[in-house]
Structure formats: structure tokens, C-alpha cells
Length: 112
Image (cartoon, rainbow, N blue to C red; front, side, top):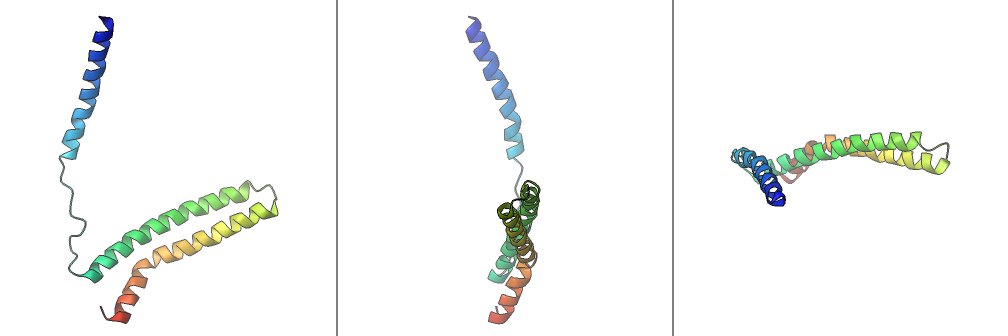
């Protein structure tokens, strides 16, 4: 008897927890492609999104490189690994920040 009551309480709690989810999911999602009239515009939107993602990951990698450097304990191999990670992270930031510009230059070169 007690087990059935506990199951009912647990099921009631689970149902009450998931009911607000249906209300949240009822919100309309805006079209991410609004304002895209050509393939070039689509490429610019994709480049902007990818650039932001790459730049964000590069910032995380700078933090990882710093942690690698701090925990290297003077080991030349680990210091070299940290330096390589830092260099690649800086290159990633440069590429991420200039992603839209790279697409714009390619668009102008091919005349799109």
C-alpha cells in the first residue's frame, strides 16, 4: 500500500515538473534566415556564426594553454605544448574575427 502511494507521489511530481515545459516549448522560434535574399547573404551569416564560434573556442584554448603553462613545472616538453596551444589559439582568434571579411573578399573576387 505504501509503495503505491509513493509511486503516485513520484508520478505526480514528475508530471507537475514537465507541465511547464510544454508552455515554454509553445513559444515561437524566429526564423534564423530572415533577411537572407541571396546565397552570398547566407554565406555571410554562416561565416559570422562560425567566426563567433571559432573565436569563442580560441578564448577557451588560451585559458587551457595558460593552465598547461602553469602546471608544466619547468618541463620543456609541456612548456612547448603550452606555447603551441597558445599560438594556435591566437591564430584561431584572428581567423574567427576575420571570417566575415574573408567571405566578403572571396565574394568580391568571384563577383557574386
